[in-house]
Length: 287
Image (cartoon, rainbow, N blue to C red; front, side, top):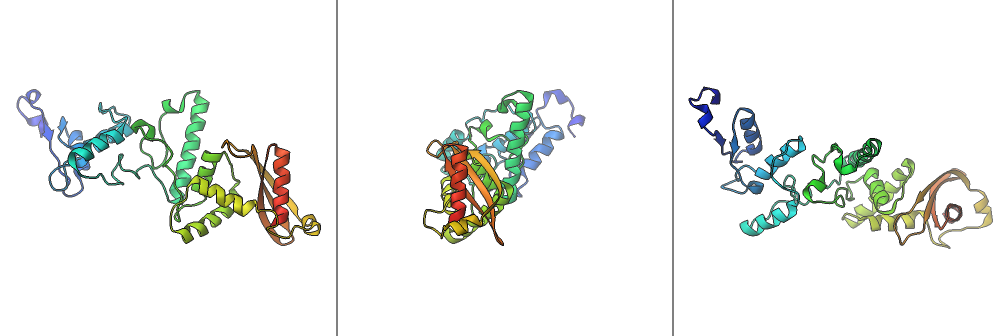
């Protein structure tokens, strides 16, 4: 249509979408593709009835595709605070880009994909010799880097009864530097599942660490530890991590073992790898 207007150069073709059918963003983007030069909207979709088209979502959709929207959302939480105060309307926790939960994954499959995406982003950055913030963003389920909006990565992965081994392993690695082998991830995920099913709420990294210690580092006297039982333990594999949290010991060893028909895992902490190995073996004898 706009190509057939007389004196087209003198016309600013503007669109004013509302969101009554939930298509405000799509209508605005299609209108721009069809020749519209201006979109009229409101921050976070405020407006009559279901609201005008959300300017923030439009702009950040462009940003996600590598197009500079020329609007600064680098402190989106402060913008949200001002809008909520001015309008006296709370923004929904799942509102695109600005809601409290938009960068948070509880589902196990989503957590696993995000954790792998972060690892690949770090790998590509190291390979290219660039800072991570300078690399193209390509992490599943996160259309933009939360840091571009002034957010941190602390809330990206949270654990509740829906979560799987990937999210649990990610939090332990991120908070404590503890790298769990895949088979232990599966075993520990069952422990966490029992806890979240019983408690009915999400768990943080500190709670995960407490559960891990209770399960794989039983206290002295927790079980029979006679020498006859100790001699029956056959170590199958060892995995070591340097613990990064300052209040913890320096090294963690996780030990996979077999005793007759039984297989299990134990763990130990020490100031050296040898000390951690001995602590893990002692924990195995107490199982």
